[in-house]
Image (cartoon, rainbow, N blue to C red; front, side, top):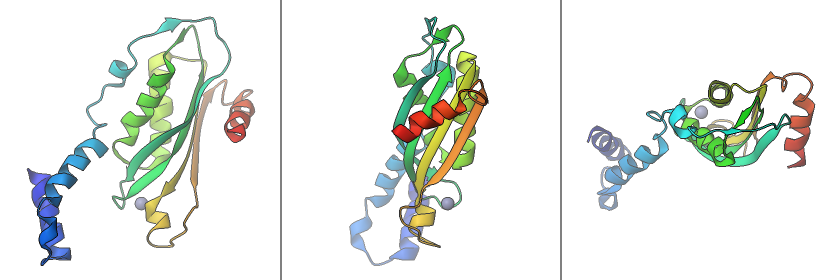
Length: 178
Ligand SMILES: [Zn+2]
């Protein structure tokens, strides 16, 4: 497998005399399959069951933990996403919101893009009256290399429709209340 062979070449550059790494390329390749399993996922397939609802207020799933990888440094981005929407006649199961987050997290990412992708996916799936996404994450490329600012969190947000205007503060207050 190509990833395996390339990881082997990298390890040989770093530590050519280490005989403890024989199976490492295979393990890394398997890990990558998991980390980057979000590419061929059809979001319409994830969220394919809808329920009619008269609910017209904010529905949120808060603090969804996710793990992603930075596309600039190939190191982890670890954080939480809070995702909400104002329904427009139909709703989806709360767990689907988490699966949508995972779908985009399991790619090489920029947090800014991931935030928008999640928001736009919800818009496409539900045609809601508004969408809000709030992501807070630690980037290992900031905390473990370069400026090495441990504990600093990167925050990105996406709002549309009613959540862009009147309900934005309520969404944020709910996130902050944790
Ligand atoms: Zn990075």
